[in-house]
Length: 73
Image 1 (cartoon, rainbow, N blue to C red):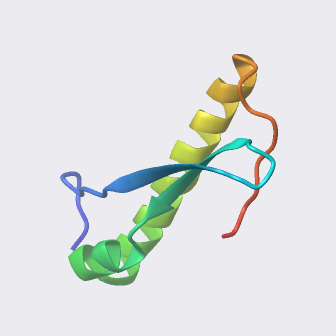
Image 2 (image 1 turned 90 degrees about the horizontal axis):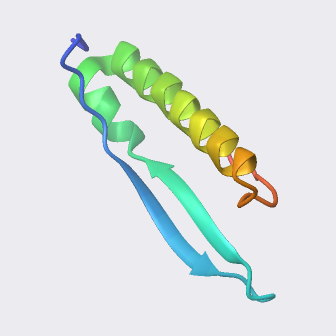
């Protein structure tokens, strides 16, 4: 079961769109969380992902390097 030593890996992909804007995409592996902790692990993965994305969003916005966000959740 998912416990205090639960580990999840997120990846960030960088690329440019058609207008030349830099795009950063934060991804998660939901199946990894589910395999490690079943439904509880999948839920923990989702919660940590949202916390990470929110923190990055706030930090980038505070530094003026974030133009917009898109949630594909």
